[in-house]
Length: 232
Image (cartoon, rainbow, N blue to C red; front, side):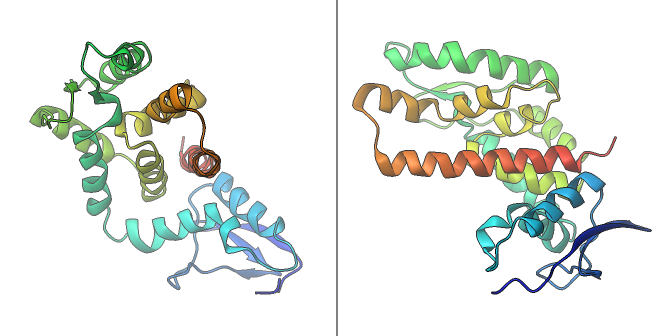
């Protein structure tokens, strides 16, 4: 589609902020008014519209797509998103480790255990660690506490958290990276520890590297969105 607008602006409304193209408010892809909860999110979306070239590239509307998903889907019924997020803690990447006699187990202990322990302390839960592939369910009280935690997020925060968690295959990483003091790069590296271990031992694959760059960009974009969505 050819670019059909010249000016991108942001206006404050009674219920939030809107991005306007040549003075006209945008609707979501589902046809609803695109009301945004913070000016920071509005700025992210406005920047995407401003940065488009003469032909619109849908792949460059990452933040817009997250906002539309939050409005059209998550706000309508957040429970499926919470259920999906809780499913990740049952198979959390950081909790499933190699056998203790394997060299990779020591690397996992060094890099993952401090992150998991910190997560447990912040969330006041206990996560089950597993060596091998046999599933071990998390404690009911852990799941209940995390469900209550997820219930505090707005639809916009949940939309971003779902992306962060799915990319990392870890709710531990997804929730931890939202902390104001979090080292986002260290957490993302932890989520990709197994891939990095394979590269270290067997060499890099060009296609895998390209996928990693793409996924890293998606992770950081979702993090920017989550932080912009936070209402003080």
